[in-house]
Image (tube, rainbow, N blue to C red; front, side, top):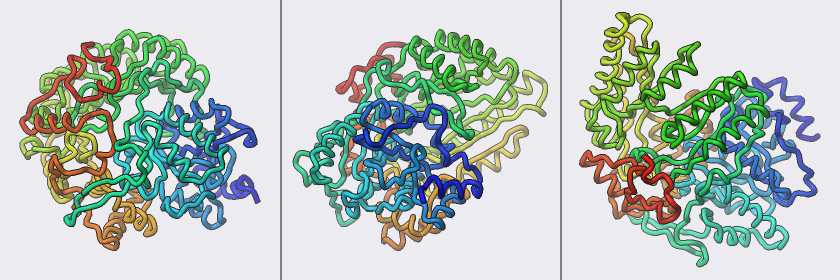
Length: 615
């Protein structure tokens, strides 16, 4: 019986059958007999989360534009579907052709967050594919991975055949062309992996052997294939205007987390927040022109019928043509009777002018991210906003009628004290007092304080710092809870400590964690980013059974001269720069936005920094 016929029997028994059907508007069908490389884009979470990821749409469009390549999609089945698949011996399949993933040439996972790693392994298992690369012969597809978590590939190094580091628009077509040539040559599997090492941004773990000191620290990573690069340089798309971008995006059958047309207006960030991995690994800033953005937006809206348009970047207000761009996009949206979403705006006069216009019929919540409660700590993390910025912006919002304000903070940051936590409470109270002063009312006004836990990440100035213990996080969370509950009109939410602890382990882990990961999956761990599925006790059992102390990766400060597992990856930002930024942080000294002048991060040695001097 074919997978399609088996699937027909199961769909009426699952919660959201639209997750598994395929055939959406703008999906691609190809003749398999004319294909050299079958590539599976695997998102290790459910359909509605994966279909909200713009990178999927970009890669799907680029690879399917190649005649010899067929890119299909694979998502993690929800628990109800997985149970039925196991019961009926139905393997994990692609949406486009309902083929077993084992039949693909390359199965590529995007690694957007560390807590998705167990889903990667679970999906391999559901596809009948062995976990370890050493156990897979030529009858299995090559297993690849990319995305931000690939910038520390070592925890998955014994599982993934090759990693793609950096922007995928150029590297993936190169990989597929290399694969077609290898397939024609009929050489063994290793020859393909060896040929990949000639491409910038490709890391093949089997060609590198790590060794360790007796105390557990990494001693060296030694090559066993001479032609492999000493360090892997990330791939960089230098010109976004020339980069392929989909205008006919796939329209999901069921509502995804973000159901809208999306245009990426620029990539990278110049602000240099010291905790932010994205701000470091996506350097330099590369913009799309206003004309190109408008063209893509108009075509996407026409081709998809979406009722909302969103522009995407790490800091929307920093686009050099943001004012004229937004005004023209507002006109486009008005002509098409769709709404415009503008994330990551600064609280300045222009932003409020825009927000006032696009939300004139309905005031939704206003979000703002001070990150830290005091100016001292904002100087440490290089968050370049002041108390005056916060209060003047909030005052303007209240005057314009906003009644719901959401504030994002982070706790556990390096050098943090309880005075910094008191600063969070003070900001919340001052905002409610400001509202009362302006409106004379308290009842309908609400401030939501949302607190996340600091996770030290690779390739950031804070990569050497320890994370707070779960007990310390809990103490700080309860401290804030007890103080904030006394302020009328303030609500409080915070992240659980145990998932943050696990995230930090894998964010800065080494190759030895692969066996822990496999053990955890065999014990039943999956969907770790979902509160209802997270099984902390099973994780601790996995570490204990494998004889690995997880605190080694999380609760110790690392020295500058220690070899780090991810040092083999060249993000374009030098370690000297990261050390300098960390030293400045300890002294509470800020660094300027690098659009003012070059601050020597190192990326300008690879590509031109087009944003320098644009402020």
